[in-house]
Amino acid sequence: MRPLIVTEFVSLDGVYEEHSPWRAPYDPDDGPFKRDELFASGALLLGRTTYEAFAAYWPTATGAFADRMNALPKYVATSRPGPLGWNATALGPDVPADVQALKSQPGGPLLLYGSGTLAQTLLRRGLVDELRLMVFPLVLGRGKRIFDTLEHLPLTLLATRALGTGVLLLTYGPARP
Image (cartoon, rainbow, N blue to C red; front, top):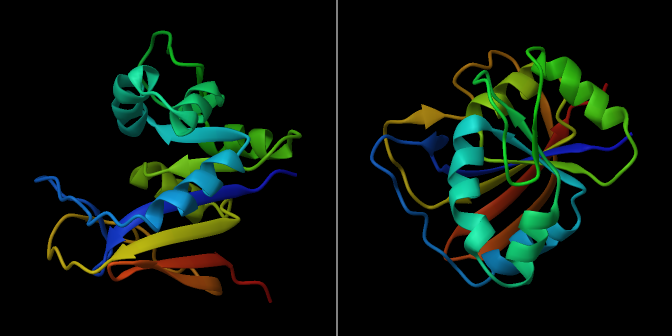
């Protein structure tokens, strides 16, 4: 069974999205982590908003990271009809069931980038095997928070890593009895 890994940029107060876009401070140490994460993946899982932003950028980007991003199959949670481009397939109306089916297929890990609403749905359903939070040293005070819709989610800390400029990578898995 292939694991589902969710990776999110969040502020110290848990905000993953705010209406006025915030830019997380970039550090060269972030690059190798994101590269390793992408190259270890077998497919991307994306919400429609993230898919559209990525599909507008990555097909014209160059380099090994862009080549890998473009080559990976993508599965998109969307309710909009119509075909998707950029090597993407729309998931059906029962997204958790479709994700469970994808997890049962052979292949490398499914990597969910951003897509906070989709991440919340899959966390709530117990489908996430690993949650990677890149926590930036920034308090936004408002915006969509990654855990807003989750009432009880016991997690186990698997690893911590400092990425530079105060960014911490916190890796969690589901709490096991």
